[in-house]
Image (tube, rainbow over all chains, first blue to last red):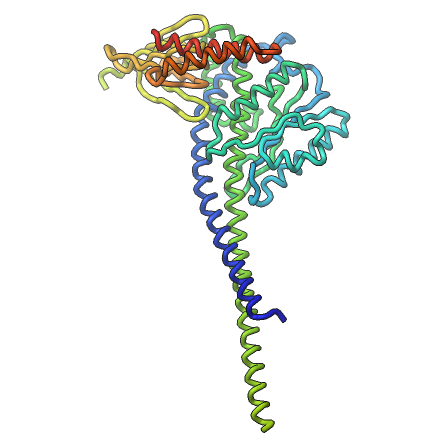
Length: 305
Length: 138
């Protein structure tokens, strides 16, 4: 039976763990608020961009001469996967679930005989994929959002890299794999096709919100002039839109990370509490046993006299 | 709201935040194919923006607020005008010396550049910095 001191030490250790996890929970909660605010403030731009895209796209007829970002390279042999995770752990299944999805995607594509390349964002994606798929990781980024905010310039680095690779003909199809922020309790690992870009078609796109559809209908009637041509604008709008989608992915992931950490740390704190109760009970029992034993020794000693 | 008729809603948004949202009387935008001014009841227009200065005049006779924009898009309708900017800075916040050294730095990088991708990247950054300098001079 462990000595009383062992119990005391163990209780003290769990107590200090609990202090840490509960502090981490608070920190995550405040960071989550910030991340959510940021995701919200990025909304107007994304919305305006979406409106403009659909406005322009409704005027453009897709031909073989359309931008490659829109129609693709005509092949889907080579895939680029952009995998977004966090830099730090201790956030439950946040990174594990995402990397699992990434692995499944890689395995599926490989089974179909496609070539796969990976760009990782966040230390966890790199570390978790390195052993199995180290040979196909072409680029890794870490340290995003280290100043507690994801800034657009960081997202832009990735966008520039992806665009350069695409223009150099290194891949045909690009997907973004990230944790989309459903709610504080749920982050859903999502694979989203970003190249070639799918034009939002009114009604058919599940992401298209109602207001956008309405506006689209309204603008179809009003005469718009375009400067330069519709095609010229589209050619500039598409790379921009890629940037916005990547940025949104990063923001979602950042908010999701904090939410996941908050939930995980909340659970850890509760578990530590349970453990302390259990240990305290055992400690008291052991102490009582020791006292009883001592009493018996004294009594039996006295009786022997 | 007597002047309600000759103002319109002006919005300046960057990917990170909505930077400005207010009534404006006239906005001058450096369009890809030349500068254009926007007032209320402007015909509907979508245009790309080259790096340059957007001038916002909120009331007739007011001094313009000058904001440098590193390219983007403008979406104009009769009642409002939205600018999607990649990067926006008040012209008064620029430091001419800093930008000059930036230009010198970029010119050096450009002459050392090895492949087409690097050349394209630095040329783009250089033209951006030069546009900033012009914005201060103007």
